[in-house]
Length: 125
Image (cartoon, rainbow, N blue to C red; front, side, top):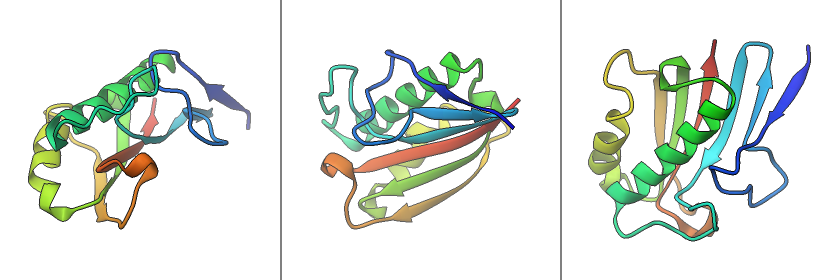
């Protein structure tokens, strides 16, 4: 099996020793995305805006690899507060209107750069 590192300048640079995504065979593993713009600035006026920024970053990485949200089979959502669950769910759901992927949502005590939400996914062609 070969693996290909996926990178796009349309999503923020990784903030650690990891790739934006790795393609292994027909499966794409997208690293956790947070609400950074391509300049590294946080987008966090509110949880809805923050979630949309995360999803747009994920979309850019998926697109670079030739995938789309329709290829996503699993997402992992990490939130700083389950009190934001409804708002995150509403924003997230706009990207998966039909046949949504499997997923879990977990409350965590802290996320990189003190953001409120981080989302990763796995996609298959």
